Length: 84
Image (cartoon, rainbow, N blue to C red):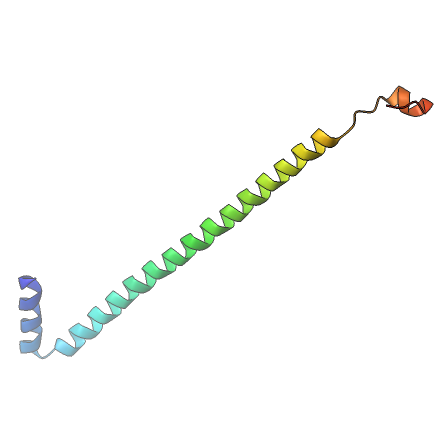
């Protein structure tokens, strides 16, 4: 902290304090924007993966339900018209 204060005092003494503050502002805002963007992309990706997982899970559940409810039909019995 003391080091930053000394740097600011030197910049003020040299007359470039405004430029130093502008550069610092650009760097800080770039860092904040990068972090926000990465968080947004991470959230979007997590939601997309969760939706894909839910769709896959629902598909598997539906497939198991259809298999459980399905009737096995012997090809010989179905061609003769006999009950399965």
